Structure formats: structure tokens, C-alpha cells
Length: 279
Image 1 (cartoon, rainbow, N blue to C red):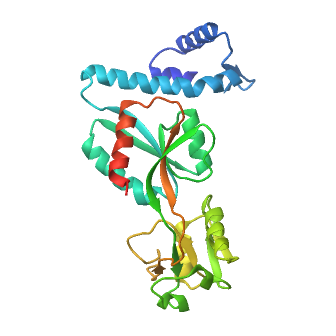
Image 2: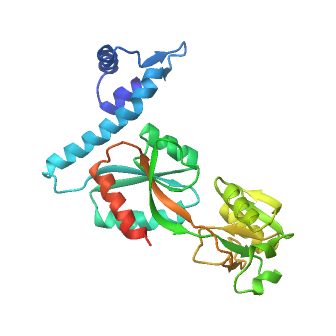
């Protein structure tokens, strides 16, 4: 209560009265105070929170629109992005969008597929850039672009001399697996289609750790996003080879909460992403 009052520049009693009046109007208790005088949300409070955040986002847009008679796209916009996609797509999108719409305060949150979909439900972000894997009910997606996996090899690996690699030729070789959903499931499925059961030497949640281990000759790996430089953090070379097998692409999508009305700035960002990334 004290922190809320300080942020709003009003008295703590005014916050308490405001919450009490809101609870009276809704006919539900929203907060519980424990013996340590900490506040926690009731079930009703947790249900109200996403709608409350959405209302605040809309009010911010309405105020910005009234100031400029609807001619200016402005306000704060928070975008979610899957952790392994973020370094490849997000910096460029942020820079170009900010240049085109300087009055939008653009921010982002990173996370796993599960975390970001929860953020959408709670109103912590309005849109999220994800892989089209493990999408939960209540989340709508639009395809932005398609990606295909490739093989990472130590430069001295026998397959590194090939222009492209058949997945079947990876059978029996040690593998370094990126163990971040949906990578583990997706790569295992891709190898299984080629009749390959991966010999996983190491698992890691770090994309750069994968590249460093491959560069050290520990094993091969599969990846989706490709950095501009084919060297590890240690400056050691990594051989990057396309896959000869016909593989279904893995879409990158822009996700939103189904049925939610986007703010104007979010709708503009969605159009901007489609224009920038489609193809």
C-alpha cells in the first residue's frame, strides 16, 4: 500500500479507500493482508488483474490520442520475445520501429514459451514473438517468417568437408543438444524422421555454449537461428552446413491473447513486423 501511494503521489489512506470502493462495486474481495502485513491477491483479484492492465493500456492510448487528435502513435508498448530468438530479431526491430515511431516507448521482456504466454494472459506484454510450438489455448498467432535448421560441426569433422549434410550421416556421432523447449523436442523429432537416435554428449540451455563446445570438437549440433559470424565466443571457427533432407520449416509467429483488442501502437507494431520479416 505504501509503495502504491508513493508511486501515485497520494496518501496511503487514499489508496486503501480506493481499493475498498472498487471491492464494494465489484462485490468481491481483491486483496488479503497476512500477519506480516503483506498483501496478496485473492482469486478474484488474480482474475481482475489482466483486464485491469489492459484497461490501463487502453487509457494510456486514449490520452495520447486526445493530445494529438489521433494523428500520432504514442504510449508505452511492451513486447515479449522467446529467449533464443531475441538476439537475432529483436535489436533490429526495436531500432527500426523506434526510428519510424519515436513517440512510442518500446520495451521488451524475454522468456520461455510458457512464461511469455503467461505474460500475455496477465497483460505484462501485449504481443510476443515465439516459435509456433506448444501454443496454448487462448493464444492466437500470425506467422511472421519461416526458419529451417542447419548443422553445426567442428571444422575438423569429416562431414565439414561436405557442402551440405544428410541427417542420416550424423548417426553415431556425439551431439551437443540445446536443451531449451521447444528445441529439444523439435531437433529430436527432426533426427527421428531421418532414423537417427542422437548420442547426446552434453546438454546446455545456452546457444553460445553449444557453439563453443562444437568449436572445441566435442560434437555436432543443430540450430535454427544463425549468427553473422561463424566463430564461438572463444574465437574458434565453427562449420555451418545446410541440411539436404526435406524438412518442414519452423514458423516464427507473433502471438497475442485471443479476443483481446490491440492498442493502436500494438496494431502498428504488428503490421511493422509483418512488413519487415515476412518472406
